Amino acid sequence: MAHHLELARERGESPLAQLPDEDVIEELIATAFWASLRREEGSPPKISLAFADANETEHPMVFAQPLSFDADVLTKLALAVERPGIHLGVARRGDQLSVWGAIRSLPRRCCVIEVAEPGLIVVKEHRGDRLAKYVNIAVLQGDQVKVIDESASSLPDCPDLLTSLLGFDSPTSWTDSVNVLVQLAISMRAHGRGGLLLVVPPDTDQWRESLVRPITYDVTPLWSELSLLSREPPEHDGIGAWRDALGRAIDSVGGLTAVDGATVITRKYEVLAFGAKIARRRGLPPIEHVVLTEPIVGSAATTVNPAELGGTRHLSAAQFVQDQRDAIALVASQDGKFTVFAWSPCEGSVHAHRVETLLL
Image (cartoon, rainbow, N blue to C red; front, side, top):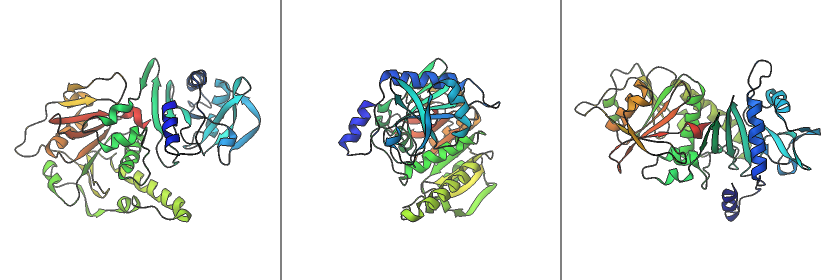
């Protein structure tokens, strides 16, 4: 985090967050963990903690008296701040941490600790753009600690989606094309039913050679609302309405992936079909293995059969990318796992990137 703050200063970013020391991070994680195991009105808490003071934010809601920073307080406040974009503000008051209020606007590079589910804690960093996804630093689940590998995006053939999700030293604006895929990935994962999204080049029908025809839900003419909204945003006065419309369009496409089969879109985010069945392209061999990596410190690449990653959906996605090498496939599992399949010219193989730790 200190390194990221230094890079941000060199780029002239402002306002910048204060840097928490190790003791603060330890206390934030420990208290959030114990709070995650409790229940409030029968439900596990979902809490986001931001290490920032009131004078570092815009329009904070400040409590008349700061509250003690403990698991009981966090659990009771959880229902008030469980919606996305709302954080409990935590800062030092004397020698102790206190909960001083709630905030929506964060300083750049602010340290955020999020309770995703019981026993699952995510350490994040705010990029500064409130429309962009936060950068995940580490994921802690029970006794497993996964620290995100910043160098993963420098690997050969790393997909733009993975580069955007890592985003440590090059924040991506909302209008950047790869960030729409990030939001689509989050939407696919959110519905919890599993899904498959194929992203193909525009202005070609070659992708149809890898699908069973006729396609039950063929879209003609192609649906272009997301494509139109993903371009340059309007002036400031219309930014709120544009953001809402873009979010609805993303969720509409994400919802299509819940239908059995694959949803097909172009790189311009035009919807071509959904509920499509993948078939091996005529004359080409069946896929036998993929290279599997995860952007986690200490993780090594392995070669596996794609069926080992999650069954038919993963096998079909890997076969499609092997047959259509200028396409990528995004696969969400019902258990929350998420895999991006892309062709790797360097390896001469389909590369499977496990990225659920980046989407939390």
